[in-house]
Length: 195
Image (cartoon, rainbow, N blue to C red; front, top):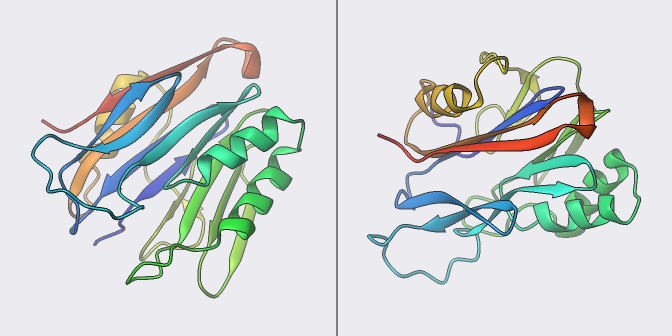
């Protein structure tokens, strides 16, 4: 099954995975306290605005994760004091689904004292509070559903397991968590760019 990009949001941990048929030569890098999806050195030149973006960023004491440029305004709204749910909903509504050949949905999640997952598709906007690991993807599972991946344990192992989930065309993955007590703990991220 091809899910495209997907996120799994838990109470203290989140996962992001890029799966791609069109632009497989990408990787996740760490820069300026955020994680960014970028083309590899082997990638063909493209002016597609949806190929490179920040996929994980801190907003206040929360972790914001998503499949595009909407990650930045969500984090910025949280930095300005917006409630997490409102920041998620406003940014998704403002940027809408991607205007590419597939009308790709935008997916995002927030990990914090209250964790949320959201998606905006051509036909719907869904924002949900979560209490168990929840997956949403750009294709197939385009509504929040219970994840089949445990978000407990070693963050490096979680990132690798996310990459290895049996969904087609894996490209790269990352996992991020609060280590310590709740939101006051350090944010730790791990990238897995394949074998």
